[in-house]
Length: 216
Ligand SMILES: C[S@@+](CC[C@H](N)C(=O)[O-])C[C@H]1O[C@@H](n2cnc3c(N)ncnc32)[C@H](O)[C@@H]1O
Image 1 (tube, rainbow, N blue to C red):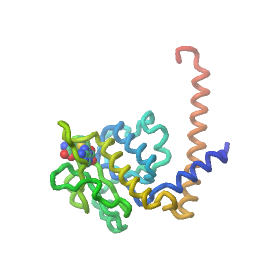
Image 2: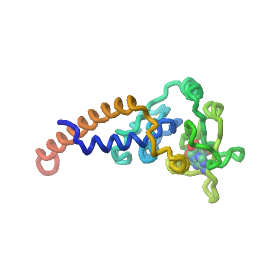
Image 3: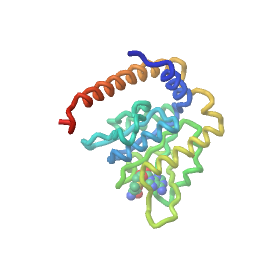
């Protein structure tokens, strides 16, 4: 079974719009719904790399929420946060961390068209203090209601779409950020993964059809 021409074209088109230097770091988000919704928004905005720390046991990907988008975003677990954040700085990324405080700046004041790592935090604790120390900018989405904070996946979506707006305005979706070589490598991987996952789906569908009524 080979990947179809149409599917391959679709993958290429998606990769041409991926924003290699717009990345997200999820600092110990523990709810699979939240993490999966963030991943889906990353796919929609063109984020290729979603990094995360997670100290729990539960599977973070909920496929009913990701709707397949987990196949098109690289989500990578970070074992050592400090090393990771230092490396991002060395690579020239500005670290923009969400922090619900009066001292934080309005999230729209940031220029997201330069290499940016957006940091979002745990549902209860927020972004860890140790991580905040690495932040070049601390941002907040204004809140005018009774609740003090937004759901983390909603907050991530709002910030990412501001980044998307700024990048679109600058024509950054009109030229690929990935090199030809990087694109080819990803196309190869995604094509193989796609065929494998389709095969898996077909075989479980066959199994399901073989089952007597009631599924037993
Ligand atoms: C429910 S909040 C955490 C609340 C926690 N008590 C705090 O003060 O950070 C979870 C995450 O959602 C994001 N978030 C929620 N509301 C936000 C806002 N108004 N501005 C920026 N980020 C927000 C941040 O990433 C935050 O770490």
